[in-house]
Length: 168
Ligand SMILES: O=C(O)CCC(=O)C(=O)O
Ligand SMILES: [Fe+2]
Image (cartoon, rainbow, N blue to C red; front, side, top):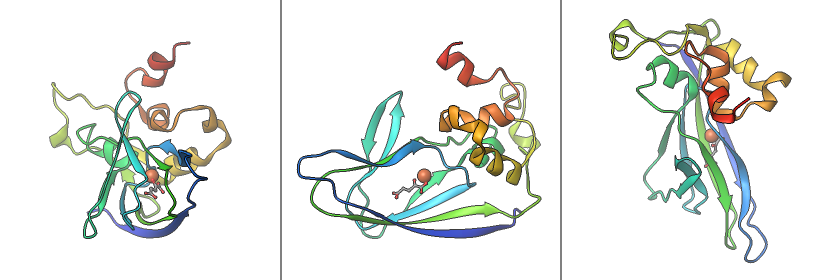
């Protein structure tokens, strides 16, 4: 069983000026293992369903959004997807949200279980130390890499996907 801490963060997104559709949070995938998000029903959270097609999530008052982070995607050998998401604001109301991030404790190795690796599902990521990835994701060198590609740059065993997508 993985040991972890939960980091809670409250966020306030200011309402944009009248008629504006404004970015509240840059598109990214989460670097913690997973995230649970709860908001005040002022919509804003969007997920990418296809390349550059975004849908806005509307949550009911009793519901939470669960997001798979990059390390959980790697652990699941790609069976679970770390979805790209962002916050876009429209309308007259500020938005409040609370995110609960799962942060594996120091020394946690992200390693896909052997049950999830076979001929049809070759191992996609090398085993890695969660904290090494977290520090990598905050480093200077990573700033040029698009958020979803960072885990591939860090731990991919196949040719890095960001090379194919962005060309050389
Ligand atoms: O505020 C939200 O709804 C999303 C927050 C988020 O994606 C994050 O903090 O990683
Ligand atoms: Fe996020």
